[in-house]
Every structure is written in C-alpha cells, then in structure tokens.
Amino acid sequence: MEASDSGEQLPHIRLIVQYDGSCFSGWQLQPGARTIQGVLEKAIGKVCGGRPIRLYVAGRTDAGAHARAQVASFRSPCKRPMRAWVEGLNKLLPDDLAVIEADEVPANFDPRRWAHSKRYVYRVWNGPTRSPLVCRHAWEVFQPLDLSVMSKAASLLVGEHDFASFQAAGCAAETTIRVMERLTVQGRPGAEVLIEAKASAFLRYMVRNIAGTLVDVGLHRRDPNGMIELLSARDRLLAGPTAPAKGLTLEEVYYEKDPPRRRRMVAGSGTWSAGSVNE
Image (tube, rainbow, N blue to C red; front, side):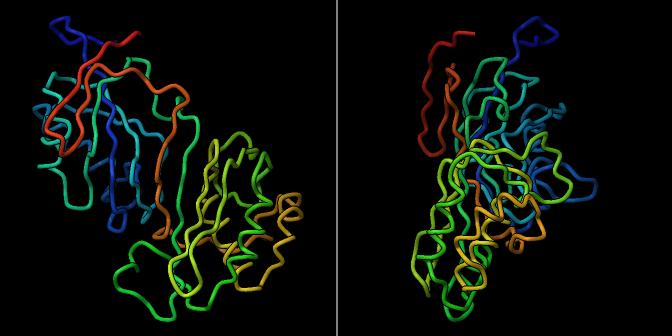
C-alpha cells in the first residue's frame, strides 16, 4: 500500500456509483467532454483539498448508457472519515450522478480484474406511442414484439461462444470468446421489455448488438434459429443493428471473492461498520 509523506498508509477506497448517462459522454475522460470519470474525480479532488486522484473502474460505459451499481476505486491521497466518500461527495456531485456506497479495500483490489461477471439490462419500450417518462432510458420500438421467438433466440446464445458477430469495430479485446451465463427476455408486448444479460465479460457494444438482433427477431425480420449460424459466421455485418445506448444499464458487477472491508458506508444509513482486512 502507498504511503503519505508522513509515512502513513494511504487508504484504498471502493465506490459503488449510480448514474443517469443521458447527459454524459460515457465513463472515460475525454478532453472538453462531460464524463462520469471527470466529474467524479473532480469531486473527490475537492474532498482531498485539491489533490489529483485517478479512478479505476470495473468497466467503461458508453455515452448515454446508465449504471445502477458501477464499481470504481482510487488510492486516496488523504485520510477522511468514511462518510466523506458518500455524504461529502454527494453534496458536490450533480443530480445525475451519486455514490451509493463506499468501503475501504485491500491495496491490491482491482475493480476490473477482480470482477467475475457483470449483469446488464437493456430496456425496450414497446408501447404504441412514445412515452416521455421512459424515453431517456429505453429504446422505443412501437411495432408489437413477439417475445416468445426473442426468448428462443436468446437461449441459443447462452453458454461459451465466439461472439465476434456481436463485437463492434475498434474493440481491443484479445479474444472474442465469452461465457454468457444468462440471457433472458421478459415483459409483454405493448409495454416494457427487458433483455437481461449476465456474462463473464462483454465485448464492445456486445449487449447493444445482441439487443438489436433480438428486436429484429421479435419483429419477424430474422429467424430465431439463425443464432447458431450467426455465431459461426463471426461477421458483425450479418447481425442486427446496434441498439441505442440509452436503453442500456449496468445493473451489477460480481466478484468471486468479495474483498474484505476495513470500513463501509452506505448512503442513507448514517452509520458505518468496521472490520479487519487480511492483505
């Protein structure tokens, strides 16, 4: 663990972050753009008296995408009460970004490499007309969807496969092999439809490309049995359109062995709990 100028060990803080990505240019820092990382790092810096910090994240989200429980961590250049990382930060953050939990974790914790799997939900609004209440968080598809064939197609993508046909251009992943632990379609035609995907890891735009393909199936533009052939083809041009980012929410990041906590603060609880860490 790093030490301060005085020789004290600097705490390693994990944050659980929630945001509406509608007005953000994604997670990652970009010159001249409003990003989640940029806004959050600036707020943390203020809590630390203006000292710079660098956040590490479980997975970068696209511009316009949302998160219910994103995981990020940083080495704090200062020591602050645990409530500062929740209550203090939330006083500085805008309405579309909040810290919902914070805890102190071992020095070697890495939010991306330690992650065992992630779960996303893609929302489709399938009502006959647009809905101002959901349009920021769902893809609006007004033609009735056939959920039974969508579910059949989704089931064929579960398991270990080569998902190259659902990978966006420019993806830097070393391999396109992924394990899809769960892929379901829930809801009803004429209302909200949820596509839930849980996998060991995801390729760039993978969930959005799968969602676009499943919607094609639901509109009877594509045979649900064609998923196996599509996987074998390893050709992005043969899959469906990329669904809009606004329908995508990172719901949860899973860790095979959750890091032991020294201290923990949950938003709204007003309390923190203490424990030991075996590093």
